[in-house]
Length: 462
Ligand code: AMP
Image (cartoon, rainbow, N blue to C red; front, side, top):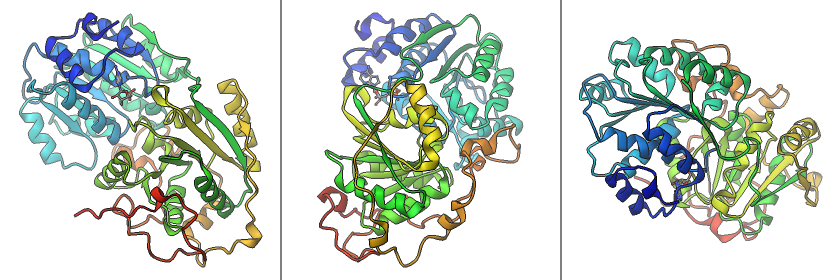
């Protein structure tokens, strides 16, 4: 099957050819003809399957006819995070090149004034996070009555983040006759209910089992003690010993731990960035950009911040914390082993994590192999002189998932990003250029044991 058989316009086919894609992915092959024939689509697909192009390519084709009117966007795409929204916009810029499409982003962290101006000029494609969109409609600056196509992307993550009441409200503000394209990686009961309420006779397109993990990912678990500093030492050891490590995402369950692990790795001489929901938009984008370009080979992230990000060629995923929800494990390790490449996923497992590991193994239908890593010699290893305060504060608290804090509906005065807890000790330099790594590390010793690329100095940004 080639792209030219799907019914896409010549302009879109030319843009696809320019990106170098030769064949549609299974979700594209199955969904695009239905989108073009104006059917509702329920796509069950994870990120990494090409699902973004599965809706952007046919939407651009459909939008070639007709014009946008002031304050009345023609299509609306809902995304759970600002990064995902920005990524979808990049897709429109890429595939809609030379088409004069007006694409607007309504996301937190950008001034209302700039967004209002854009809306007043007429918008073909509006890409929004739910909270910011409702803020605009409530201010009377936006009418959703002209929406022809509504895309709800990453619906299960919207559920996790407590956005479902917002989604229901938005679905009632758009015309009943619109076309709805709905994408989710999993189908929990609440998502099923939403699809039954808001989709009209949808075509169901499922590209892989929701709980499957790519066969190209080697998964293993490493036992660690329950103390956070033991876990950090083990992480460093794993990073130093990892074979063929090009770049890695290190996942933590809580935002405050993202900050702590980031700071700790930085102190130990690693070139590392961080990504979590409390960073401002430009810092997040800068960190992501540096990671994408390979300037920062390591990225410490929370689930919410990293969900669905299009980061090609991640060689390793480390679970600094075992996720409490098995679905998150599948999403995390889906960052590596993409498009048939080989990947490695290593989880640090403390005694308290056994239950979570058992739930993950049940979901993925296979055991996670135990790896023989010599236990960290905690007693012989001097601890850094001063531990970051946030860590001690967090140790005796019951872990709570970021998303659980925001369940139960949306506080209308709150931005979506505020659904996450504040970070107790947010490093000042998160996402910005890292200092050259010639300074003394906190612990005695040098950096000669580190792979050269982890020691590469980072170019300062202006
Ligand atoms: P997504 O699932 O939308 O996040 O896409 C995952 C990655 O696949 C992105 O880097 C896309 O640029 C890439 N991609 C999308 N469609 C194709 C295709 N037909 N052939 C090769 N790569 C693709």
